[in-house]
Amino acid sequence: MRETKLSAHDIILPLFVSEKVERRRAITSLPGVFQLSVNEAVEEARHASELGLQALLLFGIPAAKDDRASAAFAEDGIVQQAVRAIKQRCPDLVVITDVCLCEYTSHGHCGVTKLDGEHFHVLNDETVELLAKTAISHATAGADLVAPSDMMDGRVGAIRQALDEHGFEETGIMSYAAKFASAFYGPFREAAESPPQYGDRQSYQMDSANAAEALREAALDVEEGADILMVKPALPYLDILWRVRKRFGKPTAVYHVSGEFAMVKAGAANGCFEERAAVLEIMTSLKRAGADLIVTYWAKELAQWTQE
Image (cartoon, rainbow, N blue to C red; front, side):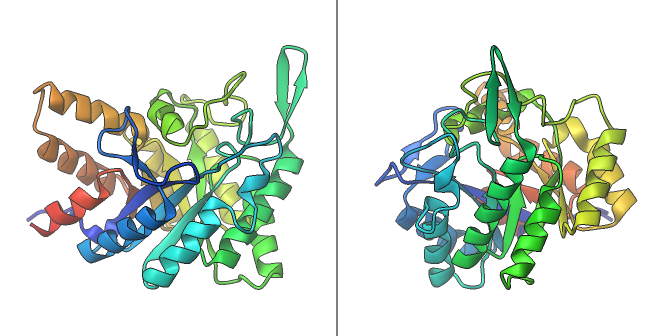
């Protein structure tokens, strides 16, 4: 009589690929998660496919950063290398790439910035231009979908237009439509080596109190050509997930983020609850709230648990 069911087809595996490592490097705040070399990312992709997972989401860590995020759209950038290698080894695996600048900028912000005394501004239009270049470079390497996570205005439309003009009409866009300024991103910033060097991201990520704004942001992304809508984080925003899925009826994803993962890991390590039972309950709640797709660091474990 169970109404909501999880399967490996619902799950997306996030991977961190780094130019700085030859062997996997543990991420201390994310137990069991690693920065990987390209070769190790290929092996992780192969293993994920064997477990029944159908998609992964790639994040890149370059060897060098600058204020224009030039490594983000370099032909031989780390994500571009990883996409080509994974698609060669696992051609049927859906490869999604994160399109943002924070991992590639020396200042750690998601866009081009301008300092004004003690204050800074994110230059929206200049950032969108670089995001479109990044998306094209990922599609050229073989990405099946690009996932803009920056929350700049107009970036979905610009990316869609750029992809179409370069012959990538079939490359999809999974938009971070409602990405909130959250306390739960801390471990990710260690993993992606992307903490802001000044200020914070509240000027372009969403206020956690705003639901109507989330629907407006999602509506704009739908109008601009998004194929999948993403809500991030997960558990504090189940109401947003439900509203987005109900309002737009489009494939809807949710990102169970690093802080949520670390919190459950810590609780389980301290004997507060059994990890597997807690994770299955959480993921079922996300599916019940409207998620067609769930990005989670438990992807490989869930592929096995749901089959069992």
